[in-house]
Structures are given as structure tokens and as C-alpha cells.
Amino acid sequence: MERVIVIGGGGAGTAAATITKRLNPALKVSVFTEFSDIAYSPCGIPFVHGREIPKFEDLFLSTVERYEEEGLDMRMETVVTDIDLDRRTITAKNQPEGFDQLVLCTGFVWEQPDVPGANLDGLHYVKDIRKSMEFDEQLDSMKRIVVVGAGPVGVEMAGGLARRGLHVDLVDEGPWVLHEILDPDVAKPVHDSLEARGVTLHLGTKTESFDGNADGHVAAVTTTDGVFECDAVVTGLHKIPNTKLAEAAGLKLGTTGAVVVDDHMRTSAPGVWAAGDVVEIPHGLNMIPITGLTGAHGYAQGRVAAVNITGGELAYDPVWVPWGMVGGDYTIGGFSMGENLAKTLGIPYVLAKGVGITKARYYPGAEKTYVKLLAEPDTLRLIGGVIHGGEGVKERCDFLAFAAKRGATLYDLAYMENIYSPPIGALFEPIQIAAQNALAAQRENKLAVVT
Amino acid sequence: MSSLSDAKRNLRERAEGALRREVLSELGRDQPGTVEPYRPKGDRFWRLLFVPLYRRIPWTAKERAMSALGMTAKGWQPPARKPGEPWRPPAGATRSASADPPEQPPAA
Image (cartoon, rainbow over all chains, first blue to last red; front, side, top):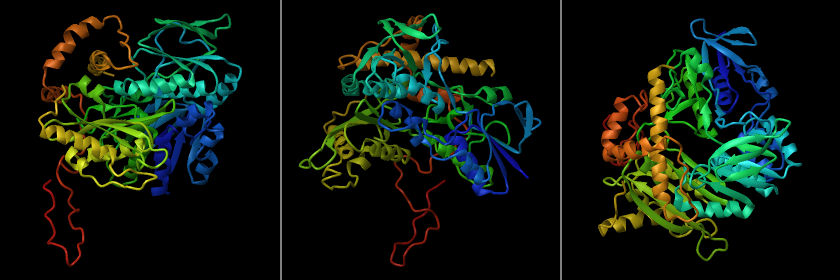
């Protein structure tokens, strides 16, 4: 019987395994994971800590038993220590296991702060649900938390823990929260929302050390903005592709440090596939590889791998990265890139900006939605954008990422169709408003190119 | 990993970091709620030499350089439709009797 081994039980791994088995039940499909749990949504963890989701059990989508009923060979708490591509074996618990096809879905590890004290007890990384459950119990007796890193997870954890009643210091070297994805014109409402929840921001601030007590547990964090006492630290720095096995096996790694794959999820080795946070995927605008995508991306990549492993033909597109989240209580999102990244790379653009409302102007609860689109100066083709405020941010960002993938221009958006239904949509769609503002500026020769 | 791969990765990290910090400082100026980014030691070379030089190079030249240096993805299919090209039905799609003659499929 032909055997497919999947290493990793996250979104990409479970997708690759379950869909492979479904498409070809004759295959033996084995899933190896170092963890005791599977099929849960780690993205929900900050919201359980913040008491917005009642319990961790709500995050589980399936069980090991159900996967076994579907015919998968589940190897829980089993660490793969070696891949031998010549012999076509992996090693787990000191035993070789042969494979015909191998799918690497080893995900990511959190960047560890490179400062003294990073190995102290009490530094928590948001990933494993069991550890999060233990941490949640400890939080009941804690008063002060320092969150290091104001990226998406750091912001969600800071906002959640402050909502829970803890004193939270959020520390980041950047000049505003989420600075790698968010433009500064959106900083203030997010900061205001976090501060309203009780988060104290320390921006432009470097963490210099974690300081422990006599028991080897963190008791304070020294930064360039002062020393903050704490009962624990939550770190939310960068996700680093977990390529230890891939690198040792000789698979090609790219400029991000992640595994290089083609659009069928094939690695540099025949019969070896990879998907999820361990791989780099090209950005659709310029084919520069990136990492740090979402669980939705990982699941889709796992599906692509499964289809191709079983003899089908499915290609994965370069990504245009719709993203969205709530900073405190303020909804923000975007796609592809904002001005921050465009200027960093040196990509010239023009701006299309507009403010609309989320419902008919006369309907209770209508809120402002701010749209900022970046477009190529000559063709007005979409490059990226940032959207914030009110309902519909996620839907607009999803739509715009798809529109950008299909080469939409500001002309297309200026005359797009939209729903007008008082409780859910205003007469004029905010995206249309932004695009039409840009076209009006162009007619008046006032559409400036930003470089 | 080869030393060339290491070098490419280090180059990308340092270059991006330096470029990003300059942009953060410029974009954030006069924006409420923002501060200056933290600048690590050793930033001066990148900030005073690399960033100005990088910015002088047109984006089209940068794209070509990145491709030549192997810093862009290879082995990926091109987009199904060229940017700005109007949608056309797939070749061989059925049409009603009252429809216009089938459009020609887009050039490959």
C-alpha cells in the first residue's frame, strides 16, 4: 500500500492528510505531530484569555478519534527527528518509517527575544492549547503582564488580558502598533481603543532584558522606557518557519528562510511536498516570497498538496494577502500592502481615499468606514490598501484582494455594483467613493505619484 | 543552508529593516499617536548609505535585480488574466442560441 506521511497537525497538515485520504482511500496516510491535540484554532486563544470566547474547548473543530474513524493513522505526541530522502524514511521514536510521498507541514516557532533572561520561566508563547489552558489558570492569580511585540498576536493578547482586568504593558520597537501591516494614519484609533481597555503602550521601546526572581521566574522587564514589574510575559514577535527538519534533509530554503515550493506545493525533492507556515509563497504583485500568512492560507495550501499528491492538478495562486483584525475594539484590515510597505520597497503609487458609511445614513448604528487604496500610477491597477472602521472591513478586504488578483483598476472600482439595503449597506459603497475621488483628482491633474 | 542562501537572507533582513525604519519615521511624522522607531546599533551605515542609494534606483530596475539575484519566486504560473484584461468566458463554454458568436479565447 502506498504511504503518505504528513509531518505536522496544524491547518495545513490536517488539510493535506484528510483530503489526501478522501481523494484516494487506498493510500495509507499517517500524521505525525509532537502535540497531544489536533484540529483546534489557535487564533481563538487570545479571545478565550480575554473571556470573549467562553472556553478553550470551543476552539476544537474535530478529534483524533474522528480522524482515526476516517482512516488516518494518527501519531500524536510523536516527534519526527530525521528525514532520509535517499531511503525514503522518517525517524520517529528512534524507529524508521517508510514513505512514498512526504508532506512537510511543520509550521512555525515563535521568535525568541534575543536578550538576557529569555529562558526564564513565565515567558508565554501563544501556540499550544494545553499550555494556554495552564497559563489561563495562572492568570487568575496574576495582576501585571508585559506583552512584548505589538504585532497581531501581541495586540490581541494585550487587549484581551486588559479586558480581563489585568494591568498590561505593551512594548514594541515600532513607532505604532502593528507597524508592519498598518499605516500610521490608522494608529490613533487603535491606540485609543487599546488604552480604553486599559493597555499601557510603550512604543519605540526596546526590550533589554527579562529579570528573574530567586525562583528563576520572570519578575520584571527592563526596557529603554523603564522597568516594568510583571507576573508573566507574553511574547508576540515574529513567526519563524520551523525548517529544522527540512534544512537537515537538504530541502531548498528561500530568502525568507522558509521552504521553497512551486505552485503545486512541490519542494526541491521529488515526492516531497510542503504547505503552511513552513513555506514561502510569492506575493502576487511582484513575486517576492513572503511568510507569515494565515490559517486559511495554510489550509488551502494543504488542499492543493493533497490534490496533486493523488494525481490531480491544482495550482495555488500567488497571494494578495487580505488581512483583518480587531485592535482593542476597533476593526482594521487591508490587502497586499499599505503605504508602509510600498514606500519601503520603493514601489511608486497613487492614493485613492474615501470615507463612507456601513449602513444607510438614516439607519441606526451606521458607522464610518475609511478606505485607502494604492494603485499603479500609469494603469491605476490596484497595488494594495488599508480599510478601517465599522462593519464590513473583512468582506471589503477579501473582495479587494480578489479584485487585485484579477487585475482590477480604480476605473473598475469606481463603477462597481453594490448592495443598497439600509440595515447593511449605504447607497454609495466606500470603495467606490475612494476610487471616484481618485479619478476626480486625476481629471484635475491632482493625483500625485508617491515614491 | 549554503552560505549564499544565508547571505541572501541576511541581506534581505537588514535591507528591509533599514528601509522600513526610515519609512516608519517619515510616514509617522505628524501623525497623532506615533513616535520615532527604535533604531538598533549599526543602523547608521544602512540609514546613511544604503537607504539613499536604494531610493535612487527606479522600481523597475529593482525588480529586475531581485529577479536576477534569485530573490523572486520561480516555478509559479503566471496570472490567468493579464492586468486590466477584460473577463472572457472559458474556451468551449456553451452559449444560448440567441447569443453572439463565441468570443475568441484570450491569447496564451
